[in-house]
Length: 141
Image (cartoon, rainbow, N blue to C red; front, side, top):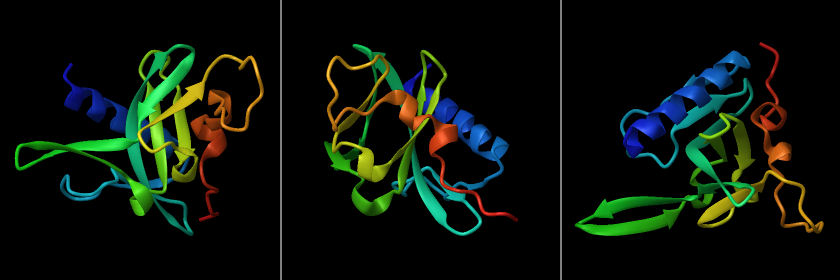
C-alpha cells in the first residue's frame, strides 16, 4: 500500500471505532482542512487529525506536523490550535490512541509502550492514551 492508502485505512478504522463508541463523526469536504474528522460529543465538536503510528525503540511514534507541497517546495507546519486532538492507529498492534493536542510535541510524539526506567513528567505512557479511556465525554442523547 502507498502512504495515501495507509492513511485512508487509518482514518476508516478510527472512524469505525468512534462510531462504535456512540459518537457522531463528520468528515470535512475536500482536503483543505488541517483536521480529518469532526467528533460530535453531543455538547462539543472536536477537530481530529488522524495519524498512523509505528513502533520504534519501545515507543509508538507519530508525526505531529503536516507536510505539503506549495509551489514545488515541501512545507512542514505544526497544527497549532487548528485541531483539538490526534487519533492514532499503530499499524503493528492495531491499537488506537487519543492524544489531546496540548499533550503532543511540535514535530513528533512518542507514546512509551514499555515501563520507563525512570519516572519523568515528559514521558507519555501509551496505556494512558488508549482511545477508549481518553475520549471526550459523550453527552446523553
